[in-house]
Length: 481
Ligand SMILES: [Zn+2]
Image (cartoon, rainbow, N blue to C red; front, side, top):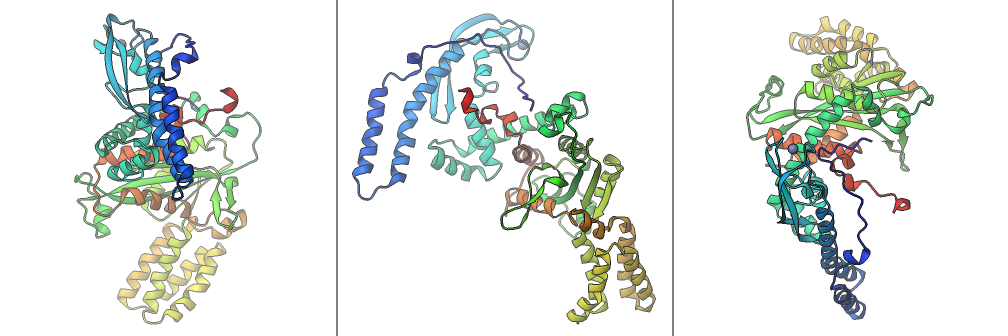
């Protein structure tokens, strides 16, 4: 996978002696920790949890000191180059102090400053070497904690969770601001990565087995699409579709999403529930065109281009089939079975408004026909009963016939069953629900840029690309340590 770090400075090879990285007061710090443990060992009302707590809280200071010393050494060795253009800095001076918030508490370091004539800006090369954004004082771990928690819960809750689990206090305001900044950075990174997918260098972003020249078993790439709406403070982009649905159009806006996976990567959990071993996601508040580009790039990473066949599954929304025809021309199309059956149920209830059993008796043979790829027979049946109906019912049935006609070619459920393909877009619908848990809380309003940034973070994590945003989060190979 590529890394995308805008500011990279080559550091000289450093070999600090280990002693210089150990805190001077370590004996007393360790003794303090042991003292805490001894109390827990002896106290009848204390258990392992108390010991864990002792070490977490008590160890902070030990680690904080070690981190401070290590950071200082790394900062001191930062070459006097501009982090943005690599130009040599002039008018250099040392001893500019800064306090950095880390997961072990605040550390203080001194570093050099210089002027970049090319950028016409004062620069602190040490900050870039340590992974701090320009004028930023939050360590990469704190940046990540903010991004991870605030994309899942409101900042005040995130503050409590972090304090409890990590033993470090970071204010809700800082977390919110930091998450927003990280999200905005993620948006830029996503754009860059997505653009790369139309170039040869995009290959490194593909699933690992797709990058190999090896012959692959023929596979079908499945793409599912769906949309949901979000509440925002502004009144941007009032949508007709919302008014049609009878929703208040000034505050609710569409979020468009898609997911893609290889059919061969569908498996079952121990309890028999279908699950996907690897899948990609796209989710955006930026409109259908934004989704089109994001989803295409994600599909490329997951096998579009090497797939024998592409299958699109979604409900009947017009934007979906426009997008599919536009960006995934040649793909097979399937309309979600459940949605189609809902349309038939509307007819059933029109024909038998007060008789649930009769409605069911009427619909069951039709559903069976649908499942046997006989959509034409279903349409014919509706057409035949139409003239016998009084006008209101006739209108309803005409509407549903029209729906079925539109999607006639997309109702190949018999084929789906034989091939082990999904009959519906349930995988995407459940994804949308999961996003909604965070982004659609009661009484919660979002700004367009704010929700897009946080959603982008969530999507990076789901796509297994979190480490591109936070390189330290990639698990280290113990063999290399
Ligand atoms: Zn520069």
